[in-house]
Amino acid sequence: MPALRFASLTRLFDPVVGIGTRERDFKRRVLREAALRPGERVLDLGCGTGTLALMARKTEPEIEIVGLDADPEILRTARSKADAANAPIQLIQGMSTELPFQDGEFDVVLSTLFFHHLRDEDKHATAVEIARVLKPEGRVAVGDLGRPQDPVMRVTAALTVQLLDGRTTTQLNVDGGLPGVFESAGFGAVAVADRMRTPAGTLEILTARR
Image 1: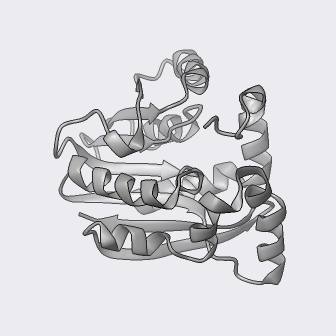
Image 2: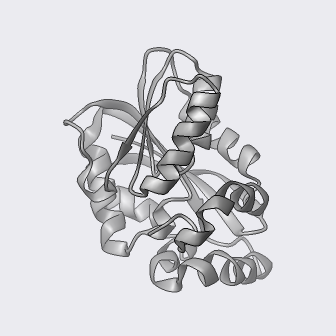
Image 3: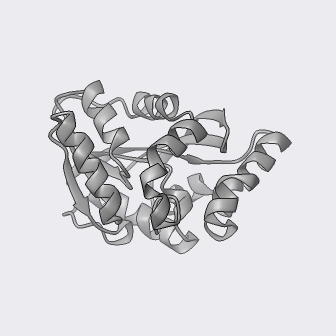
């Protein structure tokens, strides 16, 4: 599925996400929790237009970062942004439920605003795949739609992300079920490390360790 559900909206992805999710602040918080270190190999899962991958490279220039997304159109935008920034980011088309990587390839897996696009069974399959491609003690930092802090945030999520993407894929997030997905995949130290209010509803940053 295209990032904004309809292919015709892909060109609007960056401005919509930038305004609707307080994107820079949100992704900075994800990277703070990831605590990237020099020499680490990092996967940005559901990388979209590459904003998080580029921010990660700027935060820690000595990482090796790979971005994966299923949408070839949005990957073309990511490639243009990476080329313009002269940033060595490897971009791969693939599915999160069948990651095209060997076991234990990555030190860290990042993901932002991706899991709420997946059906519940694919959320679980993706978490299992993340565990497979992480090294022992590998880390996860996931930022996504979460449980609303109050009725205002609940209505906001219903009228924005849930209206656009549908309740079938988003309800588990809104119910606060994403940490349980990672626990069931065998992750430890699963925690909601941060939460923030946005025009798209409550966003949570989940951390875990293989």
